[in-house]
Image 1 (cartoon, rainbow, N blue to C red):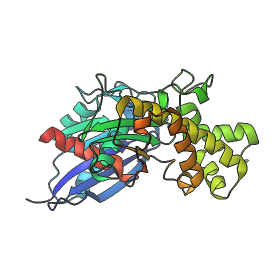
Image 2: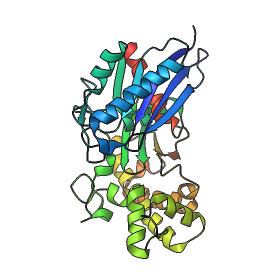
Image 3: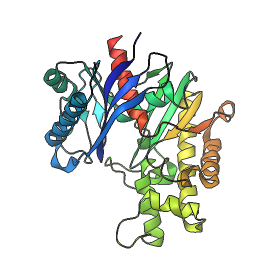
Length: 320
């Protein structure tokens, strides 16, 4: 048996990452042998984004001297599980909804293409090859500009009838009561615990960290690491809100392990601080049923490679 190779793509609102992922014959962890990134420039519309994705994949295939089994894609938006097209995308990706991503790319490249949601890909990567490996069920939340997630059971991602399962940032949170959410509703976890929201809340209370630009979660993280009591307060509130929602989700799903990942989690040391761990644990204990109190809450280890590995795994699943 020889090594296998998959072209893998992670499409987000900010960047498109593309890699050739090698799956070693000895069963060791997949790793990239080619990597590249381009800006999404989502404001230019769905067709422009599709053109960038197609160009990135062609560049990867041209640069790699070997057989590629197909293209695995993890994409922002809701992916239609039956067609591989984009069924829905919010204003972060205008015009992305309705793009027949999988079918179009498969026809143009004349090779297998499998598309799943970006958070589904992220969770699959962490469950099969990251900190969730060895657990029968994994609840994974990606915390970044927004909050998404997925539940993986026996190595399979729960996608739902419409491909929309995992929008865990859009569950009700008492801490977010009355606060508008990017989805057009209000009272959702994402409005108080995402990186965007943490930056906004700090700025509303204390002003901008850097007067020249809006405050983001990374800025607040840095202040937490420096011991700033204002930042510790904001992060503690966000952590308790996130923990409470994790407790609610655990009551429904009963995962063997909970994995936190995403850009905000992996920016600097603030999210791994005692402030973060303590506040999440407090929130979790406030809602989780007694038998679930000891469910491990771990930090993902694959970081940016998680969705690329997961998207490649999803492609391989379709070929089995």
